[in-house]
Length: 366
Image (cartoon, rainbow, N blue to C red; front, top):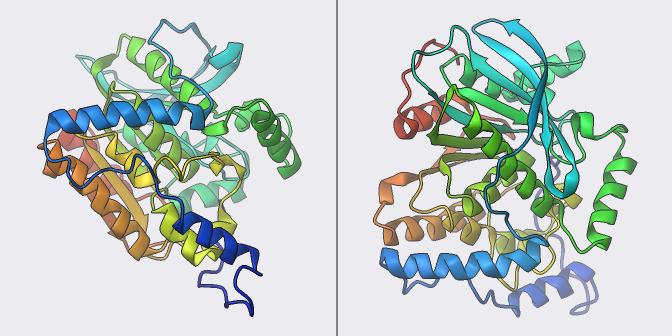
């Protein structure tokens, strides 16, 4: 996603003449049948609603989340780095695909198994895992990584976590052509099949969690997930559907879509990776976030991020707060609105995982 101008469009001379006005009216006239009811105020009722919403989202995603099964993975290269080692590996993805990834493990290793973090990238010229694992192909990308605090897989590995940074479908090694044309064609064919990129990536990311949990240096009871932008979306859906995730940080991907439609122009920065056909008649993004409750969830948004309005973010977080109150865990969710743009904020995320995954920092990175 790319930042773009914000602000409401001028009204047209006749009702419904402008396409955006017609669609805005249709959204207003289409209620979400499974938005979080205000009447839910106890854990049992919340769990019933969560189960119903997850089932209703499967046709929207175009996939059914898989049961946890062993995943074949093979390391092909190992590189010593400052405070960690970086392994290149591949593992079996959804529908017979192959997922390429970097696994970063603290060096020297801890005496006991460490928490594991799945670190998920966003767009960034379709470079994939290289962004979060801090492996830039040139100085320009290195500067981009530094300006966005994008190498968080490295930062967390240096603080004692074992981190896995996989290439999403259509990124990194999984995109032989990094052009926008290839990216768009990939998305279109996915849609022609009745699938969604969000759903396919959910399946692959769940398998990544399995790979991470299977590592001998990882404590499978302390797994987290973190991502920026498209990686934030992947984090949101993985945490919503895979209860092995014990804590999550969603950075640069949260708002109320219904409210954003009324502004409209911010949606210009949302590409085909965000297509979820039939989402709004079912729910909104804050309802998806409510599926994570009562497991700890931190949401980060920059106050100068042109993709989201602060009023829309705060309104959406009200739904999340209500779910956590119903779950009896009001302190397990938080909204970090920082003075910045579409970037990752390291310190708040570090503190969140240290609090909920019980890890002692081994360096002063970040």
